[in-house]
Image (cartoon, rainbow, N blue to C red):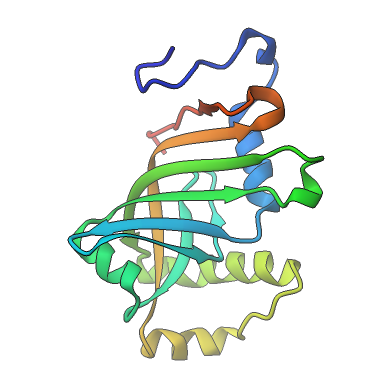
Length: 172
């Protein structure tokens, strides 16, 4: 058993790559859920997202939302995303993580927007043109990212009701 109380990858899984499995799940997920907490209590919201090779999760928040207000009080959050049921052969396959939320630096916004647009429009969902993002930012939308400090892979077929810790490479 790992220090955090989760089971280690079973020996039968020796040839499986946890990071690859997490990426496959995140690639298939349409939306994720962010969980925040503050003095008002806990809150969750669904978000469209993209991720990078370090498993940073990028999404947008409106300045007037409760979850942004919570993040301003305590930027530690939880995040989860699951493979759509029709793509999982009946298994419950997902990613769970904890981390901190920080604003995306202005010089990264365009790149993250383009990644987000490709993911969302790839799912046949409407996405505003890039000039509208600037208008959205002026109206209070902020690009944010979750820097993970713990990452888990969930697969009911492989692990039953258990989740497995996936190591993060914190040097990147």
